[in-house]
Image (tube, rainbow, N blue to C red; front, side, top):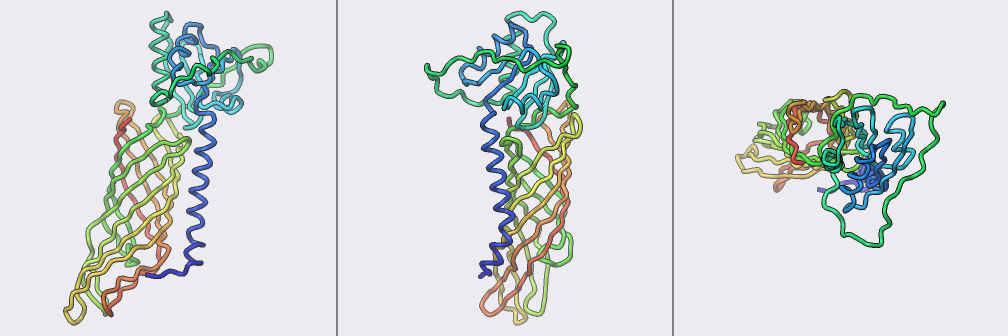
Length: 337
């Protein structure tokens, strides 16, 4: 199959821009991903956190007085994480993911309970394996606090309820319907499997979608037409409530169509072809509070197949023009870590 190079380039520019934007966001997020701000930490917790995070060489900034929100403080300090002592709770803020959660502070914070709480913070940060240690790295130390709010009183604006920090990796399966496949105007059952990974402020998703073959016929041939799609998406989480998150997303798709049948002279006709596409989607995701490894989502979207597909065998040819395919799916995911 041959494509007009200029037309194909113009149609793929939005996908290239999307990939570049995702790479830029990921690179900028890495700068603060290993910086932690502790606001008004009890001395025992401060010491325990430093001990727990020492192998990862996390930069720890201690602030005794602060105003605003954890998100604002993270932005001001260029930090990836904020742990804010708020009465008998800790507010944990993941700046990269844009979500937060809370942990109870034991009424009696001795060395053992502080160590347990520090371990919980380390797990929440998803640090992975510790890097190779180096004796040349200077120890982290307290940093001068920013100016206190008016009257010298520390002010904490309550954090808007947000879901638990999203998983770093999960698998998902979905089922639903896709319309106008191969520009035939009909809706067809579809199913897909995929994997989703959190990278900085976005989710990257890879998926494979397929469905049953559909009978089709024209003045050239009659038989069964089937399509499969391989996709890559970037999704931006937007917290709505404690268990509900919206995900606008966009991506690129590779569509493969296959035809198997016979022409009007009963000769076998077998052919397949590929076409690129752009995809836009919106997901509404729910995470049950008691089943934190389960993710349920509803998705609506549309795929724009950029070029025609020519299913050709000898002198017989079926042509599928560029077209738009709307879809609706229900997804179920399972958190791996």
